[in-house]
Length: 258
Image (cartoon, rainbow, N blue to C red; front, side, top):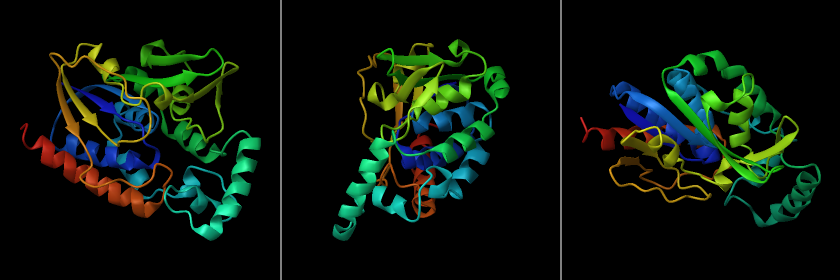
């Protein structure tokens, strides 16, 4: 039995789901999943037993499925894609976004709440944990599914993925933000449950990577063979490229285990 850790990474999350498709096809049994940010979103679908469905969602992903933009504004937010003539407009739009409290991610929230089945996740034999940060109480929240109040599981998953540029997630009157600001790679949440064989899916995204005592742990790292696209790139082209790379990289690593 293996534990699985999914790093944060926004649009790079497609890489993880490509890898998970390979993990499933190769018959590796995953018994515990921990994720931060997009890793929490993907992790919830894995625990729910719907890897294939999640893969298909990434395959057909459109930017409008994640962020509500006017016109072609999304292009201005994709890392490393700014053109000189777009900088003035970008600065103006960024000021508006800040004034309004962040990018509007209602499409993402609606999609997640429509996809996640809290009863399935709670009843699943696969353990699950996510990381987020409670801004109101100024504390990190590393929480297992059994400790999440009933009816709020989707909210905590969304809170884990509340990227700093996104509007904050509110739960019980408290404001939450992306878990990558505390622990982008939550290996500790899997090792604390006693797992020694841990598969880690890397995206190398920005975030705080906390030290974990790896003594007695067998960390199986699956990393991108090429540089992944920007974390803010939710285009179909990038998602499909990342899915393919994740699948191939996972096969290359895991074949040596079997």
